[in-house]
Each structure stands twice: as structure tokens, then as C-alpha cells.
Image (cartoon, rainbow over all chains, first blue to last red; front, side, top):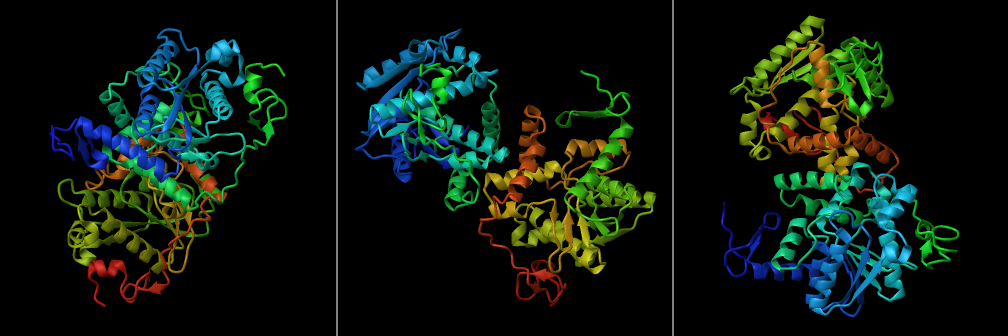
Length: 310
Length: 310
């Protein structure tokens, strides 16, 4: 095995990033991750130091690392944790909430907690079982619920920006999935920044250029305790298949993941999707229950799902 | 292992095609392959029974199967074999020429043979060694030489159509490669049919909807002798990596290869690439040596490569 030395101080490296031809010691790797995130934030005009940011934290490595990096870089970032009630077996929700609260306390950061079963009377798996969207897997229901809550809290508490911990592997898996089915309208909507539109906070993904491996290294080397287990429902998903394929590709062609993603963003900027007919969801109505934008007359999909009184 | 029965005659099946939910006995599989090819030819308006077709045959399973199918379906298909002089070790060229000649004789078919080292004084690996294009791998030089010879023979001998044995795996590997690098201009040019333009014969790929596995089954069950070995230079190519990934994908999601390809063709038909600025190679000049279309003043790239006298 080759021994790598830190690009900055020539000490023994703890990580070598083939695709960047870069190796670092612990200290300089953490520094590089923070600096690179700030560069990404600036490059895609995600937000400024003067803006209040709401970070969606799950207790996993990516979202805790994101919050840590934003805090270290002096951004005004508060957290939101949504407890989904996935507590059979490994006590996934219970565990991840504890870790998130511990993380916030240690840094004196403000954390908003929304407990789904307490607020809506049902856990996500229970909602999924009752709903058409949830047949087989609760992931679609879970996504819907999380999106609604995150956005509602951001808008109600006046956070103009909602940040999520999606990393490069997440983004390229989605991109590959959309590409393999030529879902051009989905491709149009995939971006590091989704600008704020009537009733929706701006959505940003500051970790979109870091691989899963880099994020794991950051979290471990920062001694951040996070929930190791994946959500028990994520196992065997299409996204997991795509990630596996992309890892094989990256092994053969280091840097291919990042290039696939950035070349896509460039091609989009150059207009290759401008001609595509888009069935844009038309969020011009307001839900009479939760007051969030909706495409429907009457209560929105979320309020119908949770059976909110009209 | 499940036992499958033939969809048509209920005899024991020799092949099950998961992605089509179709199983067949030997006889009805061969019949289905021939019928499906004719359907593909008609669907993409490739050619009619009244047109003379030149089939590019390498001695491999795909091109011999294609020639066999066209012959069985009553098309006027002659063959062209290009001997590349790749004869170190396994005598790749020598062997494949023998098999091709044997195939043609057995069916009373006309075969044109062009011997590269005899005609141009050098084998493909020798040309590649001398040329900038050939650094490391002779594949780019080989492609250039084969394209020039195939088209020249087609035009000189008045074949309006040039047919190649590219199968679905070949096509999706190219498509995936072009997609991963967002080479939109290359994607624009990928199609089952490239219409004839000044000085170029129409190019068609009648096997573009069959997988490698279906083609291997057709050739083996038809008892066609073909060269098993891949070209020794093809090993470890990017295309081989993409094919491996796509096979893994197909295993998890049967039918995904064909759907990736046909959805791409549909999206292109719907115009998603119409807006792309294309640096179309401008083949409006004529090479003073070989009289083929070229983008250059003076001799074409091929004639420069082989050092043809001006």
C-alpha cells in the first residue's frame, strides 16, 4: 500500500482522495472540507452569512456534518429534527433524536423538534399502511411528510433557507435514475439550489460535491457521534442499486461521479433542457388547513394524508 | 430452477427472456429472432427488399447472425470482411476471415474482402503505433480505417445501405458513456438509422433491440461457427466497463437496458436535443485521393494515415 503525505504539512495522511489527487492529515482534511463547503455555498449562491438557515438533521453523518461545518464557518444555522416514529427493532428514530440533541447541546445550537406520532397521532409506517402511496414501502409517504414539515417550519419561523445534507452519491444516484428513464422534467428540477418561490423556502445542498466516503471521514475524524444504521426501509431501494453501480464506476474511473454531476449542471446551464415541455406542478393555491402552497382545491396532499380537520 | 415452456408450442424452452416475459423452444426462438429483426427494420424504416445491402462482417457472433437473418428473410445482403492484420498470438484476423468465408460459401453469399496490410502495406497495430491517434490503443485508428473502407466499398459498388451488427448491449454502452459525460452532440448522432448524406451510405443497425445474450443464443442455436475471442485490444476498454455495469443493472431491473435505449430514442424524437448547439462535422469537401467526403482541404484523415500518394 502506498503511503500518502498531507498536501499541506507533509505529515502522514489519513485520507487520500484519488479523484482530486489530494491527501491530507486529519487537521488539514477537516479544514479542507470546511473551506470547500464554503466555496460550494458561494459558487452556487446558496446563502450569505446574514441569512438565517434551517438545517434538516436526521442524526445521520451527512446532516450532522453539514450542521457542524456551517457552525464552524460562522453561519446562523439552526436545526430541525423530525421524529418519524420508526422505532421497531433498532429504535431508529429514538436513537437518532438522542444523538441530534446531544450534538446541538454540545455546541449550544438551537434545535426544533417535530414529533410526527405525537403531532399527527400516527407513525410514518402507520400512515403508509393506510395510504395508497405507501404500498410496500413507506418512503414516498415519508418524503411527503418531511417536505411539508420542513417547509412549514422554515416559513413559519422565517428561515429563508432550508439546507439538507444530500451528498454527491445521493445526487448522482438520483441523476442516474432520472437519466436511465429519461425523466427530463425531474432532471430540470435537480440542482444544488432551488430558488424560493411563493410559499416555499429556498432549498440548498451544500454537500453536493462531497462523496459519501468524504462525509464519513469528516464525521468520524470530527468525532461526531451519528446513527450508523440506515433507515430500515431504505434497504434494497433502487437508489441503493444505483449507488452500488456508481461506486464500481468510480473505482474504474476515479472522479467520474463528480464529473457526471458537474457536467450535467453545465449542460443544463447551457440550455439543453430549456426546450423540454414541462408539466410543472402548479402550486398557486393555498391549503386551507396548513396554509402551505398546494396544487389542489381544498386541503393539500399532506393534510389529506394526516386526516387534518377541514 | 424454474422450467419454462415455449410460448408457442408448449415444448420445453431453451431460453427464457425475463425482460420480455417470453420463453421459447429452439425452433420458435430462431423464428422469433428473425421476425423481430424484420419488425425492427420496418419500425425504423431501415431498408426495403428492393435495396442492396452491404453487411459489415467481422466473423463474430453478431455480424454473422445479422447476415444469416437477412439472408433467411430474403433481403439482398452481400458481405464485406476487412482483414485488419491482428495476428499475433491467437491469429484473430486469420481465424475470423476463415469463419466468415466458410459461412458465406455454405449459403452461396457474395463476400467482398479487403486486406488492410496487403492494400496499405501495414497492419492496424502498425499504423496505430505510427499515429498520434493510436497512442496506447489501436481502437481509434481501427475505427477510422474500417469506417473509410466500409463506406468506400458501399459507395463504389453502389450499395445504398451499410448494415452493422451492433446489438443492444453495444448501443446502451455507447449511450451510457455519452450520457455520463453529457456528450450531447454524440447523443444526437446515435440512432438505429443514420440517413445517407452526400457521399455516405445509409447506416443501419437491425440488431439494436437484441441483447448480447439473445445474439449469442441465436448464433449457437443456429450452429453458426463464429470467433469466440474478443479482439485482443478490446479487453479493459471503457465500453467493457459500461457493459458490466449495465449487466448488473439488468439483473436487478430486467428490461432496463432496452427501456433506457428506447426511452432515449423517444425523448430525442420528442425534441429534447433539438436545442443543442451542434458542432456538426462539415463533410462538404472531397478527398483528392480516395474521393470520399472529408472535412479537410487535401487528403482526408484516412489517406493521411495510410500515407497515400497525393
